[in-house]
Amino acid sequence: MTISGMPASARPASSYRWVICGLLFVITTVNYMDRNILGVLKPTIQGNLHFTETDFGNIIFCFSIAYAIGYAGMGWLTDKIGIRLGLAAAAILWCLASTAHGIVSSVAGFILARIVLGLGEGGNFPTCIKTIAIWFPVRDRAFATGIFNSGSNIGAMLAPLIGALVVAFSGWQAAFYVTGAIGLIWVVFWLISYRSPAEHPRVAPSERAYINQDPEVSVQKVPWGKLLAYPGTWVYIAGGVLTNPAWWFYNNWVPSFLNSKFHVSLFAVGLPLILIYLLTDVGSIAGGWVSSALIKRGMDVFPARKITLLICAVCTVPVFLAPRLDSVWTAVLLIGIAMAAHQGFSANLFTLVSDTMPRGAIASAVGLGGAISSIAGAFSAAVIGRVLDATGNNYTVVFFACASVYVIATVIIHFILPSTRASMVTVPAETAVL
Image (cartoon, rainbow, N blue to C red; front, side, top):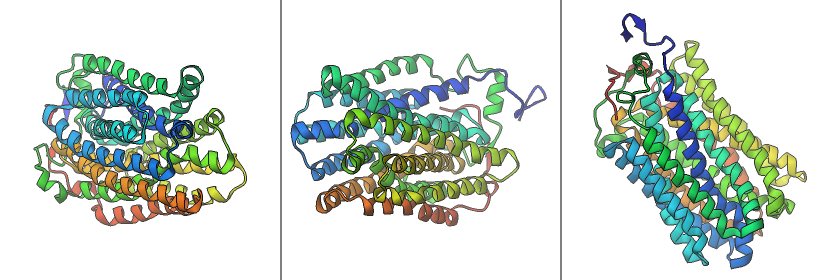
């Protein structure tokens, strides 16, 4: 594709796509602040309300089921009403639900608040992945995905800081009010700033050409019943079902693990979690950069993604040693590397959906795959709570499972994907997109 004879791959005159990526980064940060603040405050709330690990597992189970419904439903909604309104609606719902956590005082109340939170939060990733596919060419998608997805690490890192600071001055309830309010402010900026590349006045013609330089799988809408005909859907289902339970365990139970194993309190847990999520942030961006760099050097898209997935999978294996260690900082390092590898893995897993799916079905495919993997995460959370209660908070089996699933997922994905992306594309990308 060219504009006035200029190659589409030439440096575009504008770069508003990175502003959009920045907005996705911010809302993903908010998403994880709202999600992780309960895990950070768990020892404090648990001491006040006296709920068990099984109760906490049930709270996570209900959130996960709602998240699954939200993932599928919000993904479908975004494909129907568009990115701008779809992401705004999801953010408003989950931020209001996050705020509501501050007014409940029972396990049942937390379950209800988490259900509404899950319904809204499920819309974040399907919509963000579709946005990246619309605003970035194939060569940049994994890197852009890694950048916005790193917001999940920043959000998780900010959660203990906000939790400790606010709890010290105003009690644990106020922490939920603060994180919910931040997201509602973001919605205002999003509605003001977002339009599609074809309509946005700040996107130059050369940037539109750069964005749309690749042939796509297709551009037509795909009914839900036909999503399973695409390998990208199965890639995301397989990868998500196996690895998302590990990620949810890390985010919900690592503060408790550090408290149980090393007696790290709420006010002391901040520094270990900051180190963990700084490493995770590096992994998210580096994982996206590696596959993008391989593609830019001439490697086909699918081999580049697979190699990166394998590298990330190998990096998760040493985490099985974490509950056997006597040094809190060595355990933190292993957990941080494993979570960093997950985020690099996740960036490429998300991107494979946009590599293989029609643009009109990306959010729906991510939503369907995410829903199924969230159900797996729900049942794993319930099981983890019961295992920990039954074993006196022995985390050995759980960490061993987390060390195994990424390698298994990589092998399965290898056999699902065709050898090259070229065998799947059919038509050039269109400029008119949602």
